Length: 191
Image (cartoon, rainbow, N blue to C red):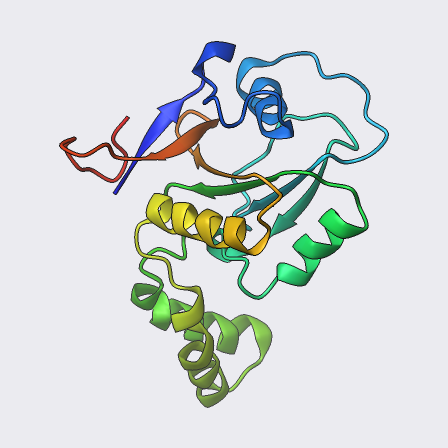
């Protein structure tokens, strides 16, 4: 299980992220710090494709990649390009509450009906498409998934710090994801 740590002051930023582009993102977005001008990106932001999230940050500060549920298992080449060629030196992986990829199987009917109605697919094509891809993209607990995906990416890119973050729709702020300490009560969004 995980816990969410808010960032309301610069001192709330975890030591692992201080003096990194992740800390800059947290200060720009949560604290409203006046951003400097950037000529090149120093951060890759991997976030969910949900339209309710808008990050406050300066132009040219980050590459922003979006994938359902912040699941980048099929988009590593884009991350690699931003690091190897683009010069990004850190990754912020951002999930969010109220994510449509959580419990995706419960949206099967709406998914199939939507492809039939709005995309012109046959019901059989839409059903097969859901069957083939939904298991790959479904997310259980959003914060736990982002933490595990950040851990996977950290092993994949060992010299690049990977920060797991959550965007909460209600407050519009980024929260740091930290594992629960032994003995702490569990809860999806304990804070």
